Length: 186
Image (cartoon, rainbow, N blue to C red; front, side, top):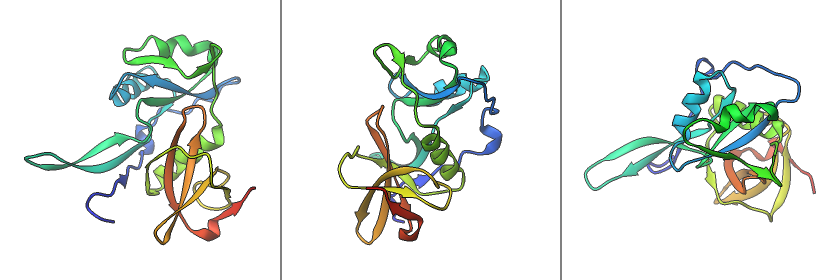
């Protein structure tokens, strides 16, 4: 890994909002004001709303110094696990613009994708933002922390990258995987 490569951030279990599973609750994407993701996540945790803000570390260089910073893997979004009838609790928070919706109805995200990403980051997988992809080989992870997740396979030099695309957000995240951990789904 070179000095400019992002480093995955493991989300410690102690920092997670306690998982409260309720009937009808799904994962939704809360769209935030620019660079307000951490503030929104902190407010959600203070209000005991189950949320997930995937982060990664990257080195940034300014004229006078270099520093490692934590950035949102999906800039402008925080994931919330709520019953859609509770969306007002999220929308009232400063920094939250709206829930990603279609025809005025909040669009639920696939739980397997969010939980797979969450588990993978907790176990220290290497992840970084990736341009959203529609073309390529569709694959499914069969073992490891992302088991069950579906995405697109990409090659970068001699390594395999698995790209998880959140279609509702039109955003993607790339993680490195071994070839034996994936199978084609096409």
